[in-house]
Length: 529
Image (cartoon, rainbow, N blue to C red; front, side):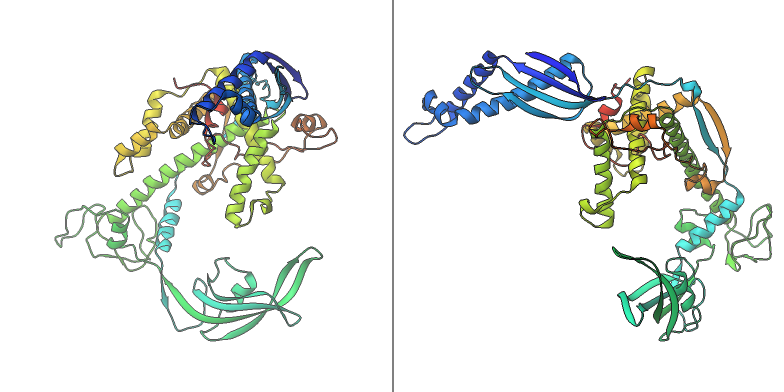
């Protein structure tokens, strides 16, 4: 087999392969013989069809089949022989398929870029630092109460926080705009609807109709801008919220049961409070915090135990969120520090996945799922980050630690009722096992980079960390002309432009989205330690 490789672009290669005619013809002859043994033709017994007849009838099709198989196998051998890091499916073109001549074809494809890694000690990583405060616990307790809100019909005018069911429509110059809404439900003051509609229902009673002015946006192919419209709303039902008390039933619903010694009627000592005592909203506990609810019967020690339980869960959530934010900062620092040409095929694969997700969420055909420039830029940075990570892993010789892999799997299976079955499934599914390995490898990578980089601790609140707002996103960098050239796809025209941005904190390695089967190893290479 003769192989020649031509560089046709920064990341594109054109490989020309010639398979000797003798090898090609021998395989064709073998295919003819194997076909003759199993083919059935009129006038011949099965397996007794002459080779000449098989070749006359099926010769061209068999030649094409053998050529297809040889192209695939010889291309794989050539890529391995030349040690070329090919990515994506190549574009193959047959050059010569004539009888008695060498089988010749070309394959055009992209290769992985060469990533010139910076000194990891020059990286700057921001890391959020936060604690759960008493106010955070208060807000969480109140949030848990609101999650269990019950709604009860009332006969009075609508007020803030009520839940209403309405019919409403909009008119512009007397003509109905869009489609009227029937039996539309929302909570007043929750920003679920336009502020004008929210304000209009205040003070209404069931059965009442009210008109109100509202500004709407018109956006079509011809015109865009604001329009003054008249809304009409009919109140069909009204319900008031009933938030549960902080009582024993509420605590037990969250798995917190008071195990204090039953009260015998004597005065409590220490922090204990006799079962059935009532907390008044004017009183404060020993830490100086006002009880959340007036008139709640609180078992002795149950409130403190419940708050301790909430604190434990919040601290666990904070730890995970801070770790994830630190990981995003590490990945962002890696991406910002490296500029190189991105393989078009890898970018397109990621964009296709994003389009599929967007189409599914919007309920539209995939061709109508427009991602927008920001999403496309983030996809490019995600690809960039993965390629940099791949290089770091290989250069630093990082391998997923077996002990940590086993520990991670035990964490995964622990919540299940039949952990042994889940464990066996993970170990028996190569892709699932690879996902666990990559998660562990990513943790080790982050730890490795943090040990070398300059790490800045950024004070933050619990709420900001768990909502992903603890560290402001760096502004997009305007690419220089040199950067624009680097980020241009090798398949684009010379006059095509492809602006790029600084890394998004979302440009991670182990995102929750599931990569297509068979791609996991390609990003990192390597193997388990």
